[in-house]
Amino acid sequence: MPELLSVSRLNAWYGESHILHGMDFSVSEGEVVTLLGRNGAGKTTTLRAIMGIVARRSGSVRYSGTETVGLPSNRIARLGVAYCPEERGIFASLDVEENLMLPPVVRQGGMSVEEIFEIFPNLKERRRSPGTKLSGGEQQMLAIGRILRTGAKLLLLDEPTEGLAPVIVQQIGRVIETLKDKGFTILLVEQNFRFAATIADRHYVVEHGQVIDRIANAELDRNIDKLHEYLGV
Image 1 (cartoon, rainbow, N blue to C red):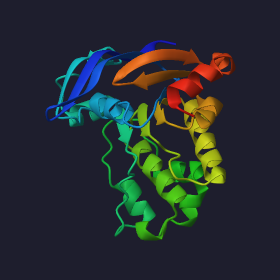
Image 2: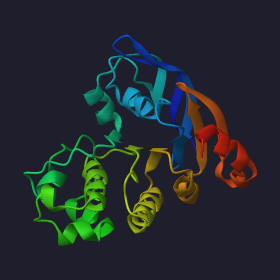
Image 3: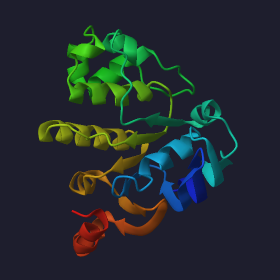
C-alpha cells in the first residue's frame, strides 16, 4: 500500500524541554500501526507533534505527500488528520449526539451520526444522555466516534484502552478493526502490547523520544522477550 504518513528526524519541545530526538517511522495507507513504549518515552508527544500542537517542532512530517511541519493544526486537520487524546475531552453539559456534532466537518467523506451509531450501538442507546452519565468505555467510544464525522482518513488514537475493563477493551479492538475495514489508517499509542497484537500490522518501540525497534505483528512471538525488556513488563 502507498505510504500515507512519513515521519523523519522529528524533534519536539515543550518550552525548554526537548522531548522527541529524531523520530523516524512511516505508516502505509490502510494500516494499523502502534507506538509502544514506557510512560514518558515520547509516544503522546509524537501524536501531538504530528498534529502540530506542541510548542516547537522540527524535522519532517509528510502526510499524503504534503509537508506539514510549519502548518498550523487546523490546516493539518483539513488535510485529513484527526487526533483523539487520552483525556477524551467529552463535554459533560452536552448529550451524546451534541458531543458528536461538535467538531466541524473539514473534508468530504466523513461519517453521518447514524453511521457512527451503527459502529457504536451503545451510543445510540445513550444518544440523549449527558456526558457525565457515560461510563469510561462509552466516553472512549464517543471520543473516537466524534472524529469520524470530520472526514479524516488518518486517525491518531492515544491510549484508547487506558483504564477500561477487559470486555470494553475487546469492543474497542473490534471498532478499530471495523474502521480499518472501512479504509481508515490508524496510528495508535498503546502500552498494552497484548491488545495491540490483536489489531496492529506493525509496532514501533519508542524510547527517549526515538524509535529503537520495528516489529511486524507476525514476528511478535519471536521478539516477546525483547519486548518485555523494552517495556519493563
